[in-house]
Amino acid sequence: MNKLQLFAFDSNNYCDFSSSTAKAMAGKDILLCVFSSDGSELLAISGQQGLTINRSADSIEITSKDTAGGWKSKIAGMKEWSIDNDGLYVPNDESHTVLSQAFENGDPVCVKVINGKTKKGMFGGLAVITDYPIEAPYDDAVTYSLTLKGMGALVDLLASPVSPDTMPDGSNALETLTVVSVAGETTGGSSIYVNPTLGAGNKYFYKTGAAPLEYPAYGETVSQTAWNGSAEIAGLSAENQIMIIETDSAGKALKAGTAVITVKSA
Image: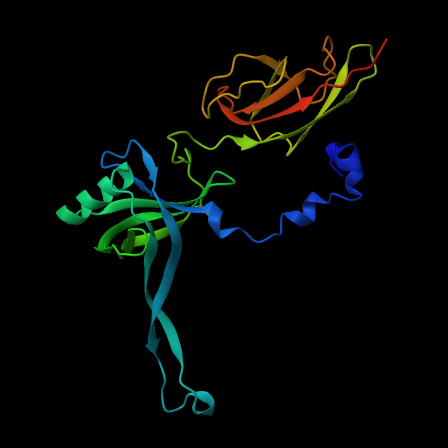
């Protein structure tokens, strides 16, 4: 058992986070995004409500006279994908400006489907816009529909993660660390436990202070105090916050998390 689990959430007696990881995703968290024409910015399509990701493959019949039992036999052929998206039309939003320009010019767009809650990419690919109607009923809001047809592969970003994993606000996903502080063995000391454990070749740094502590940006070079991941940290003030930052070997931030500091009293 990870050391963290010995202390966190009352040993998971009633808050079993391991089981919650199997929960279904909420559709509202899944967003279709499009990159700006120069690729410098990822834009969540404004007003979106519905999203369908279609994946299919042609079937090739390979039936012959000696096929067992007289049943047809087939193999998968060429694959294709498309995305259907609809929602409230927001003409002044940059995302719809990008889509309109691409549709008018017949240009492909680079699209990405993300999980807005976990800040992770799910799918990405190059596509052309084949349908982009706008509906304006007299008794309802103006809406749009969008159909994108894939050009080449739809990349599964959960199976093949990319770095950086750009998010719509222009930043990248800083993964969350669960941090627990318990009283240490020396006065003013605290033992810190982190989950998940340190990645191969990565480093830990920490900073303390009054809450809330400011998080670093993804990829930002960290200059806080180094920590080996196991040593008790001394000289802390109870009720302040401690932030543990995991970086790559070059000291660039990858993950971070905070906890309220608990220290051993005199």
